[in-house]
Amino acid sequence: METLHILLTPDFPPERGGIQRCLSDVYETFLENSLLVIAPYVKGAKEFDRNQRYRIKRTGRFLLFRRKRMRNLIFIISAFFLLLFEWIRYSFKGKKMVIHSGHILSGIPAFFIKKIFGVPCIQWTYAIEVMDKRRLWIIKRVLNGADFVLAISSWTEDYLKNFIDDSKIKSIRLALPKIKEPSREKVDELLRIYRGKRVILSVARLTQLQRYKGIDMTIEAMKIIKEKFPQAVYVVIGDGDFKKEYERMADSMGLKDSVIFAGGVSDDELSAYYSICDLFVMPSRVEENEKGIFSEGFGLVFLEANYFGKPVIGGEGGCRDAVIDGKTGFIVNPKSPEDIAEKVLLLLRNDEMRKKMGEEGKKWAENVLPEDIRDFLLKILSPLSHSF
Image (cartoon, rainbow, N blue to C red):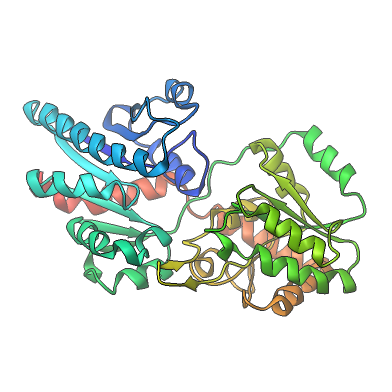
């Protein structure tokens, strides 16, 4: 019997981000007639949707410029009624339906549809969105209501075990995102700009919420690195409300010419930066306050850097699943600029180690493909066939 798989998510292309890329890459491997995506309307959605081979329904088309809280509320309400409509339509045709909730937010309408009609549901989890202490009561209800909960790292899995049954949790390793190979022109341009330099690269959103990414500690580490390796430069790709704070920090430490903020870049330029850099650094840490726990769920950027044969340096949280310590790179104490600097200097001074770790990293990055995750999802869904 034909099954309709509905991906319900507030995070989906053309909006950029790790969750968006992860979900898009996995679900586009489903048969085109078996997939429906329900996601909010964002700038560029109309053109993006036209170029996909599966159906996409957008919520809040006329609310593009409203605050995110309002957009989320409209998404939850609209998604519930869209799910209800699809359930009625498919039930009359005698067909099955499965909900794949791509975020805890989309888990709310999915929870009610499952509760009322018994529609099977898989819930994706990453990190900070399920570690919000202010909304823990609804998070627990949503997760316990799903048939299976996907955890993208052992860090997230261990956290989930505090309030849902172990048997519901399915741990997966994220697949390498689709990579756009850089143009020769862009690579040559960057090689000219950074001629004679050794490039240390970070890619992150530079927001106050995501300070845990470790850009601040890496800037502090650069003070040590520059003294011992003058040709090193630290390039930070990304934008956000905390960018000026990082710039002020670098300036105050006399690192204005050694810490370069490249801003947001195109996919072609991002690939070119990965191609010309010597190593990748994102020493994320785990931070906790009254609002919740903030940490990296996994870190697709590590796999992207690995794909280009670059060794990587990570920190706490899900980074420990993305980086194989001593093989594809190093795990460091993210709160210690000295430890970060030590590992960066070790790699900069050792060409053979960098090359070896880069080769191992490329193998590791290509070890899991989006098709593998799709097959895993279909496999864990098969025992639920009796409940359709």
